[in-house]
Length: 177
Image (tube, rainbow, N blue to C red; front, side):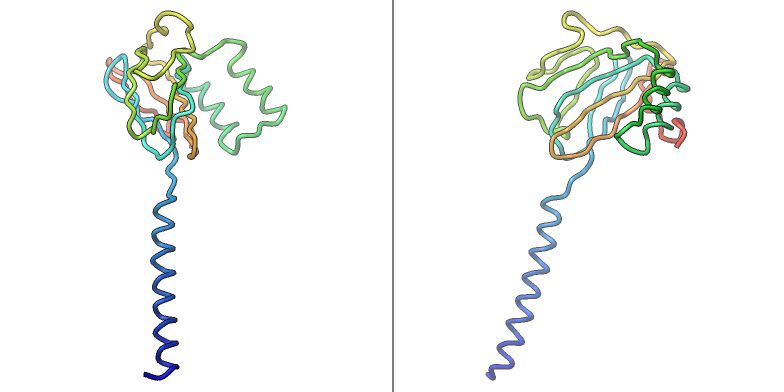
């Protein structure tokens, strides 16, 4: 076999190897944002899509849809707020603390494996807020937010309401997107 044919075959094998390595590398490092999915009744069950590990977990509210539409309009462009935007948010929310419940994991919990019932701290989690007792009950018709920042993945805040004693996700369209 000639040297030219051997070189050509080696180039083809090298290209094939690089393609396979690239494809495997891309799928191996795929990252999916953490996104809460709220379902069930009242209290709701919160599960997650995503590839990250939970840094902490919180539920806030009650909000009106108008408050959240105002916040969504201000914050959907980015994470860094101007002084004017902070002032606008203060006008929307006032000085009230809307945090209802916060948990910190004691270990590394992949979000895709978690299922959390509102008001019940799962094994391996410490309730941070309220320090003692159960969080406030959820009110029919009000809107709540679920925050689940994650390690090794971005996250999206989820919004839900209680309608006819069932937890229902609030869509981006309802928020004004």
